Structures are given as C-alpha cells and as structure tokens.
Picture 1 (cartoon, rainbow, N blue to C red):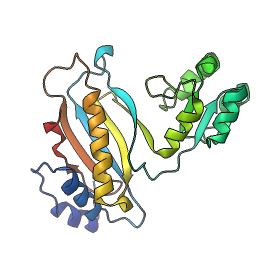
Picture 2: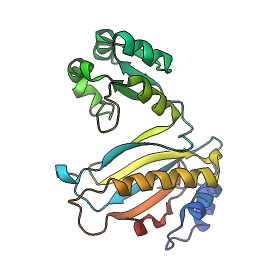
Picture 3: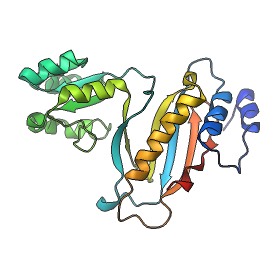
Length: 230
C-alpha cells in the first residue's frame, strides 16, 4: 500500500513499541494528522471476548464529554405527544408509517441514528433487514428504544455514541476531531474506555482489552496503554 511522504514523516514520530497514556497519545494523533480537512479521531479497541456468544457481547452507549464534532441527523419513530416532543428536542425527521415506506420504497438513508418509542417497534421491526446491516436498528441497550424520545434525541445531538463489537471482536468508535486538541480528546478517550471496561461481560476470561489504537482519518495508528485498565 502506497503511503505519501507526509504519512512516512508522521510514522517516524511514533515509537511502535510504546504504549501511550491518554494525553501523550492524543498529542501524537494531533501532531501526525496532516490532511487539509479536520480529521476524525477514531479508537479501535480489540477485546479478549468471543462475540459469537451472547453472554460475551459488549455493547452500550455513552455521551462523550466533548461530543464527536459531527452533526448527527436523528430520525424518530413516534406519534402524538412523543412526536411533538422529539421535534422540539431537535429531531431531524419524525414520523410513523410514512417514514417506513420512504425507507422501503426510496431506499432513503439521510440519517445517522434512529430513535423509537417502544410502541413503534412493531412498525420499525419491518425495517430490520435494511436497518440492521447498517447498524441503524434502534435498541433498548443503546438507549434508542425509549419512552422518552426527546431525551434520547438531546443525548445523541450532544455527542452520544454507541459502541459495539464487530465480528472480529473489535470496537471502532469516533472520539472527536483533531481540532479538539489533545486535552479534550484525552477526556473523550478516557470516558469511552471507562464505559467499555464497565461493560465487561462476566463470562469474559483472561485479558479483556487486548489492544487499543487511536488514529486520525489519514494518520498512522498510535498504540494506547488501555490494556492496563482492562
């Protein structure tokens, strides 16, 4: 894979064998981000669990102290007062069957998060095949199936992110933008790692956090010392 000159220069600043603490690691991530746009900083956390077993699933949601720096478009399935409350809370789209049909017929996905009140789940269930693979299906565990849809909308807009294992037992999560600077990124990083450690399944054996790498969109990976926490 060809890497540009800037990338090569960036890599030299990182000690491949070192595990960096939060602030130092984030300083390196910011320093090595050389793109002309404000890069997103992502965390990739490999866990010592087996996601094929239901009792070893790791999934949840957390509001990052400084948000993600991303404008998140929220779609809400609700009716009556709840629909009104969702609109007031800043939801981008609110509806019922009309939105289900729009998604089914027009293959419409101009949204990032789906929130639903419990009484709408029968309707939303029809979208399982299209929302599921995209990671958009609302769930009680992530706080996106809730009677208080307005609160859920506010949290998502404030920077709530969902974390879950992929098939290779890795959690990929954005923790902000390079423009946040090392301090804010370190606080977001600590909040996310703390939540993942708390979510450790009772069935997990051995080392829980196998590895943790932080990287900006175009920058090299920086190994973080998160394994000490898990």
